[in-house]
Amino acid sequence: MKKEMICINCPKGCSLLVEEKNGSYIVTGNTCPKGKEYALSELLHPMRIITSTVTLLNGSQNRVPVKTDKPVAKEKIFEIMPKIYALHVSPPVSIGDILMENIDGQNANLIATQNVKVK
Amino acid sequence: MRPKHKDLVVIGGGPAGLAAALAAKKAGVEDILILERDEKLGGILNQCIHNGFGLHTFHEELTGPEYASRYIDQVLEEKIEYQLESMVLDIDEAKNITVLSPVHGLEKIQAKAIVLAMGCRERPRGALNIPGSRPAGIYSAGTAQHMVNIEGYLPGKKVVILGSGDIGLIMARRMSLEGASVLAVAELMPYSAGLQRNIVQCLQDYNIPLYTSTTVVDIEGKERVQSVTLAKVDENLQPIAGTEQEIECDTLLLSCGLIPENELSRKAGLKLSPASKGAEVDENLQTSIPGIFACGNVLHVHDLVDYVSSESAKAGQSAAAYIQNPAEQVQEGVSIETKGLVSYVVPEKIHTKDLKEDVLLRFRIKKPIDDGCFILECDGKQVLKLARPKLLPANMQELKVKKELLQNAQSIRLYAGKKEEA
Image 1: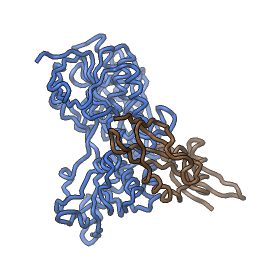
Image 2: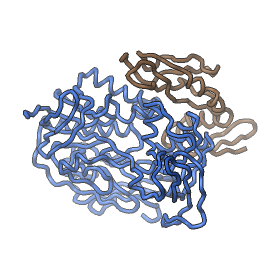
Image 3: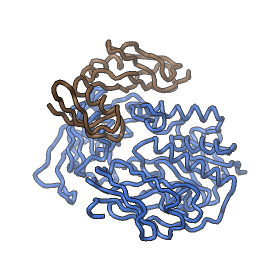
Protein backbone atom coordinates (compact mmCIF):
# COMPACT_ATOMS: atom_id res chain seq x y z
CA MET A 1 0.00 0.00 0.00
CA LYS A 2 1.16 3.49 -0.86
CA LYS A 3 -0.35 6.82 0.09
CA GLU A 4 0.70 10.32 -0.91
CA MET A 5 -0.21 13.26 1.29
CA ILE A 6 0.73 16.82 2.15
CA CYS A 7 1.92 17.52 5.66
CA ILE A 8 -0.16 20.17 7.45
CA ASN A 9 2.17 20.72 10.39
CA CYS A 10 3.75 23.87 9.02
CA PRO A 11 3.44 26.21 6.03
CA LYS A 12 6.16 24.36 4.15
CA GLY A 13 3.62 21.66 3.22
CA CYS A 14 6.01 18.81 2.48
CA SER A 15 4.79 16.13 0.06
CA LEU A 16 4.89 12.85 1.96
CA LEU A 17 4.76 9.28 0.81
CA VAL A 18 3.83 6.45 3.18
CA GLU A 19 4.51 2.87 2.12
CA GLU A 20 3.68 -0.30 3.94
CA LYS A 21 6.35 -2.94 3.77
CA ASN A 22 6.07 -6.21 5.72
CA GLY A 23 3.73 -4.70 8.28
CA SER A 24 5.77 -1.57 9.00
CA TYR A 25 5.34 1.88 7.51
CA ILE A 26 8.02 3.85 5.78
CA VAL A 27 7.59 7.61 5.42
CA THR A 28 9.56 9.59 2.87
CA GLY A 29 9.48 13.25 1.81
CA ASN A 30 9.31 14.63 5.33
CA THR A 31 11.90 17.22 6.37
CA CYS A 32 11.32 16.91 10.12
CA PRO A 33 10.19 14.30 12.66
CA LYS A 34 6.72 15.87 12.85
CA GLY A 35 6.15 14.94 9.23
CA LYS A 36 6.65 11.27 9.97
CA GLU A 37 4.34 11.44 12.96
CA TYR A 38 1.71 13.21 10.86
CA ALA A 39 1.92 10.73 7.98
CA LEU A 40 1.34 7.74 10.27
CA SER A 41 -1.48 9.40 12.16
CA GLU A 42 -3.07 10.59 8.91
CA LEU A 43 -2.96 7.09 7.50
CA LEU A 44 -4.26 5.27 10.55
CA HIS A 45 -6.37 7.83 12.39
CA PRO A 46 -6.49 11.44 11.16
CA MET A 47 -6.59 14.03 13.94
CA ARG A 48 -7.26 17.78 13.85
CA ILE A 49 -7.26 20.69 16.26
CA ILE A 50 -10.64 22.45 16.18
CA THR A 51 -10.71 26.24 16.40
CA SER A 52 -13.96 28.14 16.74
CA THR A 53 -15.67 30.76 18.88
CA VAL A 54 -18.20 30.61 21.72
CA THR A 55 -20.82 33.09 22.86
CA LEU A 56 -19.68 35.69 25.39
CA LEU A 57 -22.40 37.00 27.68
CA ASN A 58 -22.23 40.57 29.02
CA GLY A 59 -18.82 41.17 27.58
CA SER A 60 -17.11 43.90 25.63
CA GLN A 61 -17.33 41.66 22.57
CA ASN A 62 -19.76 39.06 21.19
CA ARG A 63 -17.49 36.04 20.85
CA VAL A 64 -14.50 34.43 22.52
CA PRO A 65 -12.18 32.40 20.29
CA VAL A 66 -11.46 28.84 21.45
CA LYS A 67 -9.49 25.76 20.43
CA THR A 68 -9.08 22.16 21.49
CA ASP A 69 -5.80 21.89 23.41
CA LYS A 70 -5.04 18.61 21.62
CA PRO A 71 -6.02 17.24 18.23
CA VAL A 72 -9.31 15.34 18.15
CA ALA A 73 -10.44 12.57 15.80
CA LYS A 74 -11.24 14.13 12.44
CA GLU A 75 -14.44 12.14 12.02
CA LYS A 76 -15.76 13.50 15.34
CA ILE A 77 -15.52 17.18 14.36
CA PHE A 78 -19.18 17.52 13.42
CA GLU A 79 -20.20 15.75 16.63
CA ILE A 80 -18.15 18.19 18.67
CA MET A 81 -19.22 21.42 16.94
CA PRO A 82 -22.81 21.50 18.38
CA LYS A 83 -21.29 21.32 21.88
CA ILE A 84 -19.18 24.36 21.05
CA TYR A 85 -22.20 26.22 19.59
CA ALA A 86 -24.15 25.61 22.80
CA LEU A 87 -21.47 26.97 25.12
CA HIS A 88 -21.92 30.40 26.74
CA VAL A 89 -19.23 31.98 28.88
CA SER A 90 -18.97 35.18 30.92
CA PRO A 91 -15.97 37.45 31.35
CA PRO A 92 -13.32 37.59 32.61
CA VAL A 93 -11.77 34.96 30.36
CA SER A 94 -8.03 34.32 30.11
CA ILE A 95 -6.02 32.52 27.47
CA GLY A 96 -5.80 28.85 28.44
CA ASP A 97 -8.95 28.81 30.61
CA ILE A 98 -10.61 25.43 30.25
CA LEU A 99 -14.14 26.07 29.04
CA MET A 100 -15.10 22.42 28.53
CA GLU A 101 -13.20 19.41 29.86
CA ASN A 102 -12.59 16.23 27.90
CA ILE A 103 -14.80 17.35 25.04
CA ASP A 104 -16.88 14.49 23.62
CA GLY A 105 -14.62 12.00 25.37
CA GLN A 106 -11.77 12.98 23.07
CA ASN A 107 -9.24 13.49 25.84
CA ALA A 108 -8.91 17.14 24.78
CA ASN A 109 -10.15 20.27 26.54
CA LEU A 110 -11.73 23.27 24.91
CA ILE A 111 -9.69 26.31 25.96
CA ALA A 112 -9.99 30.07 25.44
CA THR A 113 -7.49 31.70 23.09
CA GLN A 114 -8.06 35.35 23.96
CA ASN A 115 -8.11 37.43 27.12
CA VAL A 116 -11.43 39.19 27.70
CA LYS A 117 -11.86 41.59 30.60
CA VAL A 118 -15.11 42.42 32.37
CA LYS A 119 -16.79 45.27 30.51
CA MET B 1 -3.18 73.48 17.05
CA ARG B 2 0.08 72.93 18.99
CA PRO B 3 1.65 69.68 17.91
CA LYS B 4 2.67 66.99 20.39
CA HIS B 5 6.19 65.69 20.00
CA LYS B 6 7.15 62.04 19.94
CA ASP B 7 10.41 60.31 19.16
CA LEU B 8 8.72 57.44 17.37
CA VAL B 9 5.18 57.06 16.12
CA VAL B 10 4.13 53.61 14.90
CA ILE B 11 1.06 53.68 12.67
CA GLY B 12 -0.88 50.47 13.16
CA GLY B 13 -1.18 48.23 16.23
CA GLY B 14 -1.24 44.89 14.42
CA PRO B 15 1.59 42.35 14.39
CA ALA B 16 3.91 44.65 12.43
CA GLY B 17 3.36 47.72 14.60
CA LEU B 18 3.66 45.79 17.85
CA ALA B 19 6.93 44.12 16.85
CA ALA B 20 8.40 47.38 15.54
CA ALA B 21 7.51 49.30 18.72
CA LEU B 22 8.95 46.57 20.95
CA ALA B 23 12.20 46.39 19.00
CA ALA B 24 12.58 50.17 19.08
CA LYS B 25 12.00 50.17 22.82
CA LYS B 26 14.59 47.44 23.31
CA ALA B 27 17.01 49.48 21.22
CA GLY B 28 16.66 52.36 23.66
CA VAL B 29 13.82 54.55 22.38
CA GLU B 30 11.65 55.62 25.31
CA ASP B 31 9.17 58.00 23.75
CA ILE B 32 7.02 55.77 21.53
CA LEU B 33 3.36 56.03 20.54
CA ILE B 34 1.39 53.33 18.70
CA LEU B 35 -1.69 54.62 16.87
CA GLU B 36 -4.36 51.98 16.22
CA ARG B 37 -7.72 52.69 14.66
CA ASP B 38 -9.51 49.62 16.03
CA GLU B 39 -10.80 49.25 19.60
CA LYS B 40 -8.00 46.87 20.54
CA LEU B 41 -4.44 46.02 19.63
CA GLY B 42 -3.63 42.94 17.57
CA GLY B 43 -4.91 43.94 14.13
CA ILE B 44 -6.15 41.25 11.80
CA LEU B 45 -4.87 38.51 14.15
CA ASN B 46 -7.93 39.07 16.34
CA GLN B 47 -10.19 37.61 13.67
CA CYS B 48 -7.74 34.90 12.57
CA ILE B 49 -8.91 32.44 15.23
CA HIS B 50 -7.43 29.40 13.43
CA ASN B 51 -4.11 27.88 14.45
CA GLY B 52 -0.83 27.77 12.59
CA PHE B 53 0.81 30.97 13.79
CA GLY B 54 4.10 31.28 15.61
CA LEU B 55 5.98 28.13 14.58
CA HIS B 56 9.08 30.16 13.73
CA THR B 57 8.84 32.76 16.48
CA PHE B 58 7.67 30.69 19.44
CA HIS B 59 8.23 27.11 18.17
CA GLU B 60 4.64 26.23 18.92
CA GLU B 61 1.42 26.44 17.02
CA LEU B 62 -0.77 29.31 18.18
CA THR B 63 -4.03 30.85 17.05
CA GLY B 64 -4.05 34.46 15.83
CA PRO B 65 -5.36 35.99 19.08
CA GLU B 66 -2.81 33.98 21.10
CA TYR B 67 0.03 35.13 18.86
CA ALA B 68 -1.14 38.75 19.18
CA SER B 69 -1.38 38.51 22.96
CA ARG B 70 2.27 37.44 23.23
CA TYR B 71 3.20 40.81 21.73
CA ILE B 72 0.45 42.84 23.42
CA ASP B 73 1.59 41.52 26.83
CA GLN B 74 5.14 42.68 26.10
CA VAL B 75 3.92 46.10 24.95
CA LEU B 76 2.02 46.45 28.24
CA GLU B 77 5.01 45.23 30.25
CA GLU B 78 7.31 47.68 28.53
CA LYS B 79 4.73 50.41 29.16
CA ILE B 80 4.77 51.48 25.54
CA GLU B 81 2.12 54.15 25.01
CA TYR B 82 -0.69 53.31 22.59
CA GLN B 83 -3.84 55.08 21.53
CA LEU B 84 -6.87 53.13 20.26
CA GLU B 85 -9.72 54.26 17.99
CA SER B 86 -7.21 56.65 16.49
CA MET B 87 -7.34 57.14 12.75
CA VAL B 88 -4.35 58.72 11.10
CA LEU B 89 -5.62 61.07 8.40
CA ASP B 90 -2.40 62.49 7.09
CA ILE B 91 1.37 62.29 7.20
CA ASP B 92 3.67 64.77 5.55
CA GLU B 93 7.30 64.51 4.60
CA ALA B 94 8.35 66.54 7.65
CA LYS B 95 6.86 63.68 9.72
CA ASN B 96 3.83 65.62 10.97
CA ILE B 97 0.98 63.25 11.69
CA THR B 98 -2.68 64.27 11.80
CA VAL B 99 -4.77 61.88 13.85
CA LEU B 100 -8.44 61.78 14.80
CA SER B 101 -9.83 59.99 17.86
CA PRO B 102 -12.92 60.21 20.07
CA VAL B 103 -10.83 60.91 23.17
CA HIS B 104 -8.41 63.53 21.86
CA GLY B 105 -10.30 64.89 18.86
CA LEU B 106 -8.06 66.16 16.09
CA GLU B 107 -4.37 66.15 16.99
CA LYS B 108 -1.07 66.91 15.34
CA ILE B 109 1.96 64.89 16.29
CA GLN B 110 5.49 65.75 15.23
CA ALA B 111 7.60 62.61 15.14
CA LYS B 112 11.35 62.19 14.84
CA ALA B 113 10.74 58.87 13.12
CA ILE B 114 7.69 57.00 11.85
CA VAL B 115 7.14 53.29 11.27
CA LEU B 116 4.38 52.57 8.77
CA ALA B 117 2.58 49.36 9.75
CA MET B 118 -0.91 49.80 8.31
CA GLY B 119 -1.25 46.33 6.83
CA CYS B 120 -3.12 45.48 3.66
CA ARG B 121 -6.66 45.35 2.29
CA GLU B 122 -8.56 42.81 0.26
CA ARG B 123 -9.14 43.34 -3.43
CA PRO B 124 -12.85 44.21 -3.63
CA ARG B 125 -15.45 43.17 -6.20
CA GLY B 126 -15.16 46.52 -7.94
CA ALA B 127 -11.54 45.76 -8.78
CA LEU B 128 -12.33 42.33 -10.22
CA ASN B 129 -14.72 43.20 -13.05
CA ILE B 130 -17.16 40.40 -12.23
CA PRO B 131 -20.24 40.68 -14.43
CA GLY B 132 -23.77 40.17 -13.13
CA SER B 133 -26.18 41.91 -10.79
CA ARG B 134 -25.28 43.50 -7.48
CA PRO B 135 -27.40 41.76 -4.84
CA ALA B 136 -26.65 41.29 -1.14
CA GLY B 137 -24.54 38.26 -0.26
CA ILE B 138 -21.23 39.17 -1.89
CA TYR B 139 -18.46 39.67 0.64
CA SER B 140 -14.72 39.65 0.73
CA ALA B 141 -13.47 36.61 2.64
CA GLY B 142 -12.03 38.83 5.37
CA THR B 143 -15.35 40.62 5.86
CA ALA B 144 -17.05 37.25 6.24
CA GLN B 145 -14.31 36.26 8.69
CA HIS B 146 -15.05 39.36 10.77
CA MET B 147 -18.78 38.64 10.71
CA VAL B 148 -18.35 35.02 11.83
CA ASN B 149 -15.47 35.30 14.27
CA ILE B 150 -15.91 38.75 15.81
CA GLU B 151 -19.59 39.61 15.42
CA GLY B 152 -20.97 36.07 15.56
CA TYR B 153 -23.14 36.09 12.44
CA LEU B 154 -23.13 33.58 9.61
CA PRO B 155 -23.21 35.60 6.37
CA GLY B 156 -24.83 32.82 4.32
CA LYS B 157 -25.66 29.14 4.11
CA LYS B 158 -24.80 28.06 0.57
CA VAL B 159 -21.47 29.49 -0.35
CA VAL B 160 -19.28 29.76 -3.44
CA ILE B 161 -15.79 31.19 -3.03
CA LEU B 162 -13.89 32.94 -5.81
CA GLY B 163 -10.16 32.91 -5.32
CA SER B 164 -8.10 30.38 -3.42
CA GLY B 165 -6.04 32.73 -1.28
CA ASP B 166 -5.45 31.57 2.27
CA ILE B 167 -8.27 33.64 3.75
CA GLY B 168 -10.72 32.10 1.28
CA LEU B 169 -9.53 28.60 2.16
CA ILE B 170 -9.66 29.28 5.89
CA MET B 171 -13.19 30.68 5.46
CA ALA B 172 -14.29 27.62 3.48
CA ARG B 173 -13.50 25.52 6.55
CA ARG B 174 -14.87 28.06 9.00
CA MET B 175 -18.23 28.40 7.21
CA SER B 176 -18.46 24.58 6.96
CA LEU B 177 -17.84 24.22 10.71
CA GLU B 178 -20.56 26.77 11.41
CA GLY B 179 -23.10 24.82 9.39
CA ALA B 180 -22.93 26.40 5.93
CA SER B 181 -22.31 24.29 2.86
CA VAL B 182 -19.42 25.47 0.76
CA LEU B 183 -20.18 24.29 -2.76
CA ALA B 184 -17.06 25.27 -4.66
CA VAL B 185 -13.85 27.26 -4.63
CA ALA B 186 -13.01 28.70 -8.05
CA GLU B 187 -9.48 29.83 -8.87
CA LEU B 188 -8.66 31.82 -12.00
CA MET B 189 -5.07 30.60 -12.18
CA PRO B 190 -4.08 26.99 -12.92
CA TYR B 191 -2.70 26.72 -9.34
CA SER B 192 -3.90 27.82 -5.92
CA ALA B 193 -2.73 31.06 -4.35
CA GLY B 194 -3.00 29.48 -0.91
CA LEU B 195 -0.67 27.30 1.12
CA GLN B 196 -0.75 23.55 0.41
CA ARG B 197 -1.61 22.76 4.01
CA ASN B 198 -4.74 24.88 3.75
CA ILE B 199 -5.90 23.05 0.64
CA VAL B 200 -5.64 19.83 2.63
CA GLN B 201 -7.05 20.89 5.98
CA CYS B 202 -9.63 23.43 4.76
CA LEU B 203 -10.91 21.97 1.48
CA GLN B 204 -10.10 18.25 1.29
CA ASP B 205 -11.09 17.64 4.92
CA TYR B 206 -14.55 19.03 4.14
CA ASN B 207 -14.88 17.59 0.62
CA ILE B 208 -14.99 21.04 -0.94
CA PRO B 209 -14.03 20.99 -4.64
CA LEU B 210 -11.34 23.37 -5.91
CA TYR B 211 -11.78 24.30 -9.58
CA THR B 212 -8.60 25.80 -10.99
CA SER B 213 -8.52 27.81 -14.25
CA THR B 214 -12.09 28.78 -13.42
CA THR B 215 -13.79 32.10 -12.76
CA VAL B 216 -17.19 33.63 -12.06
CA VAL B 217 -18.88 34.85 -15.24
CA ASP B 218 -22.31 35.73 -13.85
CA ILE B 219 -24.07 36.49 -10.60
CA GLU B 220 -27.88 36.19 -10.50
CA GLY B 221 -30.25 37.55 -7.89
CA LYS B 222 -32.11 40.78 -7.22
CA GLU B 223 -32.24 41.23 -3.46
CA ARG B 224 -29.91 38.37 -2.57
CA VAL B 225 -27.49 36.19 -4.52
CA GLN B 226 -29.45 33.29 -6.06
CA SER B 227 -26.82 31.68 -8.21
CA VAL B 228 -23.29 32.09 -9.47
CA THR B 229 -22.11 30.87 -12.87
CA LEU B 230 -18.59 29.49 -13.15
CA ALA B 231 -16.70 28.92 -16.39
CA LYS B 232 -13.31 27.50 -17.30
CA VAL B 233 -10.73 29.95 -18.63
CA ASP B 234 -8.14 29.49 -21.35
CA GLU B 235 -4.42 30.20 -21.09
CA ASN B 236 -5.12 33.91 -21.58
CA LEU B 237 -7.50 33.74 -18.61
CA GLN B 238 -10.51 34.33 -20.89
CA PRO B 239 -13.71 32.36 -20.17
CA ILE B 240 -14.33 29.45 -22.54
CA ALA B 241 -17.85 29.43 -24.02
CA GLY B 242 -19.79 26.24 -23.35
CA THR B 243 -18.03 25.47 -20.04
CA GLU B 244 -20.48 27.44 -17.89
CA GLN B 245 -21.84 25.81 -14.76
CA GLU B 246 -24.55 27.52 -12.72
CA ILE B 247 -24.44 26.91 -8.98
CA GLU B 248 -27.41 27.81 -6.81
CA CYS B 249 -26.15 29.64 -3.70
CA ASP B 250 -26.87 32.62 -1.47
CA THR B 251 -23.34 33.86 -0.86
CA LEU B 252 -20.22 34.59 -2.88
CA LEU B 253 -16.99 35.17 -1.00
CA LEU B 254 -14.05 36.83 -2.72
CA SER B 255 -10.49 35.88 -1.85
CA CYS B 256 -8.70 37.44 -4.77
CA GLY B 257 -5.58 38.94 -3.37
CA LEU B 258 -4.35 41.50 -0.88
CA ILE B 259 -3.02 44.95 -1.59
CA PRO B 260 -0.74 46.93 0.76
CA GLU B 261 -2.70 49.88 2.18
CA ASN B 262 -0.52 52.80 1.16
CA GLU B 263 -2.95 55.71 1.19
CA LEU B 264 -0.91 57.46 3.89
CA SER B 265 2.39 56.61 2.22
CA ARG B 266 1.13 58.30 -0.93
CA LYS B 267 0.08 61.38 1.04
CA ALA B 268 3.53 61.56 2.56
CA GLY B 269 4.98 61.47 -0.95
CA LEU B 270 6.92 58.24 -0.51
CA LYS B 271 8.24 56.49 -3.54
CA LEU B 272 6.17 53.33 -4.08
CA SER B 273 7.23 50.18 -5.88
CA PRO B 274 4.81 49.10 -8.62
CA ALA B 275 6.06 45.52 -8.23
CA SER B 276 5.55 45.01 -4.48
CA LYS B 277 2.83 47.70 -4.24
CA GLY B 278 4.50 48.91 -1.06
CA ALA B 279 7.02 51.64 -0.33
CA GLU B 280 10.43 51.35 -1.89
CA VAL B 281 12.82 50.57 0.96
CA ASP B 282 16.52 49.99 1.52
CA GLU B 283 18.20 47.27 3.59
CA ASN B 284 17.16 49.11 6.78
CA LEU B 285 13.52 49.22 5.62
CA GLN B 286 13.83 52.97 5.31
CA THR B 287 11.59 54.53 2.67
CA SER B 288 12.53 57.30 0.27
CA ILE B 289 11.94 59.80 3.11
CA PRO B 290 14.66 59.60 5.78
CA GLY B 291 13.18 58.63 9.15
CA ILE B 292 10.10 56.94 7.71
CA PHE B 293 10.24 53.14 7.76
CA ALA B 294 7.79 50.52 6.52
CA CYS B 295 7.22 46.90 7.50
CA GLY B 296 4.71 44.07 7.44
CA ASN B 297 1.88 43.83 4.96
CA VAL B 298 1.91 47.53 4.13
CA LEU B 299 5.36 46.94 2.66
CA HIS B 300 4.56 43.69 0.86
CA VAL B 301 2.02 40.97 1.51
CA HIS B 302 3.43 38.16 3.66
CA ASP B 303 2.07 34.67 4.00
CA LEU B 304 3.33 34.15 7.55
CA VAL B 305 2.94 36.48 10.51
CA ASP B 306 6.25 35.19 11.85
CA TYR B 307 8.00 36.87 8.93
CA VAL B 308 6.01 40.06 9.55
CA SER B 309 7.24 40.09 13.14
CA SER B 310 10.91 39.60 12.28
CA GLU B 311 10.82 42.13 9.44
CA SER B 312 9.06 44.67 11.66
CA ALA B 313 11.57 44.22 14.48
CA LYS B 314 14.22 45.21 11.95
CA ALA B 315 12.22 48.35 11.05
CA GLY B 316 11.94 49.19 14.75
CA GLN B 317 15.69 48.81 15.24
CA SER B 318 16.39 50.95 12.19
CA ALA B 319 14.01 53.64 13.45
CA ALA B 320 15.82 53.60 16.80
CA ALA B 321 19.19 53.97 15.09
CA TYR B 322 17.83 56.90 13.07
CA ILE B 323 16.44 58.65 16.16
CA GLN B 324 19.74 58.21 17.97
CA ASN B 325 21.78 59.38 14.99
CA PRO B 326 19.64 61.06 12.33
CA ALA B 327 21.15 61.16 8.87
CA GLU B 328 19.15 63.47 6.64
CA GLN B 329 21.48 62.88 3.74
CA VAL B 330 20.69 59.49 2.35
CA GLN B 331 23.33 58.20 0.01
CA GLU B 332 22.16 56.66 -3.22
CA GLY B 333 21.67 52.92 -2.95
CA VAL B 334 22.08 50.27 -5.62
CA SER B 335 18.74 49.07 -7.00
CA ILE B 336 18.28 45.32 -7.26
CA GLU B 337 17.43 44.32 -10.79
CA THR B 338 15.02 41.38 -10.96
CA LYS B 339 15.29 38.75 -13.69
CA GLY B 340 13.42 35.63 -14.74
CA LEU B 341 10.35 34.84 -12.66
CA VAL B 342 11.01 37.19 -9.73
CA SER B 343 7.89 39.33 -9.33
CA TYR B 344 9.34 41.68 -6.71
CA VAL B 345 12.08 41.90 -4.13
CA VAL B 346 12.25 43.70 -0.79
CA PRO B 347 14.45 45.67 -0.16
CA GLU B 348 14.52 47.27 -3.60
CA LYS B 349 17.85 48.92 -2.97
CA ILE B 350 20.95 48.35 -0.90
CA HIS B 351 23.60 50.79 0.30
CA THR B 352 26.54 48.63 -0.55
CA LYS B 353 29.18 50.99 0.85
CA ASP B 354 30.13 50.12 4.44
CA LEU B 355 27.39 47.54 4.72
CA LYS B 356 27.24 46.62 8.41
CA GLU B 357 24.95 43.59 8.39
CA ASP B 358 24.00 40.68 6.20
CA VAL B 359 20.97 41.42 4.03
CA LEU B 360 17.82 39.34 3.91
CA LEU B 361 16.10 39.49 0.52
CA ARG B 362 12.41 38.62 0.51
CA PHE B 363 10.71 38.05 -2.80
CA ARG B 364 8.02 36.20 -4.69
CA ILE B 365 7.95 34.33 -7.95
CA LYS B 366 5.37 34.79 -10.70
CA LYS B 367 4.42 31.15 -11.27
CA PRO B 368 5.26 27.65 -10.01
CA ILE B 369 8.77 26.44 -10.88
CA ASP B 370 9.91 22.82 -10.79
CA ASP B 371 13.61 22.22 -10.50
CA GLY B 372 14.34 25.89 -10.05
CA CYS B 373 17.13 28.00 -8.69
CA PHE B 374 17.97 31.44 -7.35
CA ILE B 375 21.01 33.30 -8.61
CA LEU B 376 22.45 36.51 -7.23
CA GLU B 377 24.89 38.49 -9.35
CA CYS B 378 26.96 41.43 -8.22
CA ASP B 379 28.75 43.51 -10.86
CA GLY B 380 27.99 40.81 -13.42
CA LYS B 381 29.55 38.03 -11.32
CA GLN B 382 27.54 35.19 -9.87
CA VAL B 383 28.01 35.33 -6.09
CA LEU B 384 25.27 32.97 -4.95
CA LYS B 385 23.37 30.12 -6.53
CA LEU B 386 20.84 27.98 -4.72
CA ALA B 387 18.88 25.08 -6.14
CA ARG B 388 15.21 24.87 -5.20
CA PRO B 389 13.37 21.70 -6.29
CA LYS B 390 9.84 23.10 -6.03
CA LEU B 391 8.77 26.74 -5.89
CA LEU B 392 5.24 28.11 -5.51
CA PRO B 393 4.01 31.71 -5.82
CA ALA B 394 2.06 31.20 -2.59
CA ASN B 395 5.32 30.97 -0.65
CA MET B 396 7.41 34.05 0.01
CA GLN B 397 11.05 33.28 -0.69
CA GLU B 398 13.95 34.35 1.49
CA LEU B 399 17.60 34.69 0.61
CA LYS B 400 20.12 35.66 3.24
CA VAL B 401 23.11 37.34 1.64
CA LYS B 402 26.40 37.80 3.49
CA LYS B 403 27.48 41.43 3.61
CA GLU B 404 30.89 40.53 2.15
CA LEU B 405 29.21 39.44 -1.09
CA LEU B 406 27.46 42.79 -1.53
CA GLN B 407 30.18 45.13 -0.25
CA ASN B 408 30.76 47.99 -2.71
CA ALA B 409 28.77 46.34 -5.49
CA GLN B 410 27.70 48.74 -8.25
CA SER B 411 24.99 46.51 -9.65
CA ILE B 412 22.94 43.68 -8.15
CA ARG B 413 20.78 41.26 -10.04
CA LEU B 414 18.42 38.59 -8.67
CA TYR B 415 17.24 35.71 -10.84
CA ALA B 416 14.70 33.00 -10.15
CA GLY B 417 13.72 30.40 -12.70
CA LYS B 418 14.32 26.96 -14.07
CA LYS B 419 17.81 25.63 -13.44
CA GLU B 420 18.42 24.75 -17.07
CA GLU B 421 17.37 28.21 -18.27
CA ALA B 422 19.59 30.06 -15.82
